[in-house]
Amino acid sequence: MTKKTTLLQFFHWYYPDGGRLWQEVAERAPTLAELGVTDLWLPPAYKGAAGGYSVGYDSYDLFDLGEFDQKGTRATKYGDKEALTQAVNSLREHQIRVIYDVVFNHKIGADEKEQVHVYKVDENNRNDIAEVGIDAQAYTRFTFPGRQGTYSEFLWDYTCFSGVDYIEQPDDKGIFKIANDYGEEGWSDQVDDENGNFDYLMGANVEFRNHAVVEELKYWARWLMETLPCDGFRLDATKHIPAWFFKDWADHVRDAAQRDLFIVAEYWSHDLAALQQYLARVDGKVMLFDVPLQLKFHLASKQGDAYDMSQLFTDTLVAVDPAHAVTLVANHDTQPLQSLEAPVEPWFKPLAYALILLREQGVPCLFYPDLYGASYTDQGDDGQQYQIEMPVIAELDKLIQARQRFANGEQHDYFDDPHCIAFSRSGTAEQPGCVVVMTNGAESSKTIVLGENFAHKSWCDFLGNREDDIMTDEHGSAAFPVNGGSVSVWVMAEAE
Image (tube, rainbow, N blue to C red; front, side, top):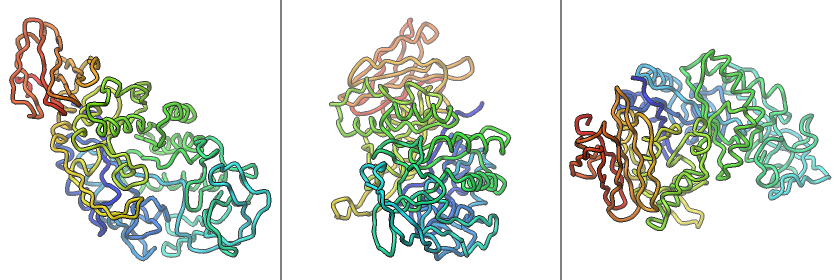
């Protein structure tokens, strides 16, 4: 039986320092495969500006996978290249696909300053660029002295970047458009239109209109695929990168691999129309995270029984374009104290995971802390320190198993009540189905007619939240109960 694609983000923003993650990947590979995880999304595997403390999104050297003494360390936060190689080989041995995080939007931690001519930009309207320029120095030259040209001799200078957020002589902070041979008319097109034009995000902003830069980023992908097992990519910050680039890049890497690759882009917008526009611009060559659905999960978990559960999938990507939707409950940006904080309360997570794991539409993405827990301390926007505990979601193991065992056959929705909703999977000739019932209110039930093929069958809750045995009548009909603020996955006793 071919397993249904189930992606796991195997890290979070506050994963402990010390080079343990790659080792943990290798150790957990057998149990993850047995559980039903098919794809593992790894954090950025290359050297960041913060060296051994870098989560990986402060991209410095794409070719340093924990191999060279740069930024004060040989290993990355997650381990050295040898441990990474062992980890991905272990995943492959257990038929788990390897998905790498790609951070192309910017570089941070330049090795040298350069003399540049820049124009100050209005941060709230990036199209408002000063007419008079400034001669200054900026951190735009990346020579990677620790690597000394191994794997690539490409050196990044100011012609490879369109903007910076800091200059010296004169010293100033803000957003500065770099004058070079590219982009004389302004920023790149085909980016998000927040702040007028959202090309610039942070650090030294990569200039994709420089052909040499584009070729280097294609070469890096080919090099990575030749160096390590690779089955796909997660693309970071794509709302800030011209869509035409990733449309071309996705074609290139698939051609180089000579097979299909799983590619999902992070276009973090709650505007469904913006997501659809991006997919059109890239000709559907990548999938997108369903950001509107994640926000709905957050709001539903906060509002409790005041939230209308029947509208959970209204205006979501998975509802209008399921073939391009990767559904998620949480990620490293939405977890508490992070930049896009929109946490889903623990009580609602089993309901949300049931909705992305057991339905027909979309590819579900799980989050490391929900499987293994997380505990960390950080400062909030108010300057106060907070201790955060993200508990293990007890039902998640069973829900992942249920995806592979019971999420089969035709789907029928019963989203006819603001509190109690349900859906059924009819099963196939070879594989059993299930009935999923959940509520954000008091204990409830949903009467479902499954048909005469399911007459006089005994059903039990695979999650163990209900101890009842439910018997369908001669029409295959029964009232399937659910506890208050809970979810039950009803399966035929003979299949369980």
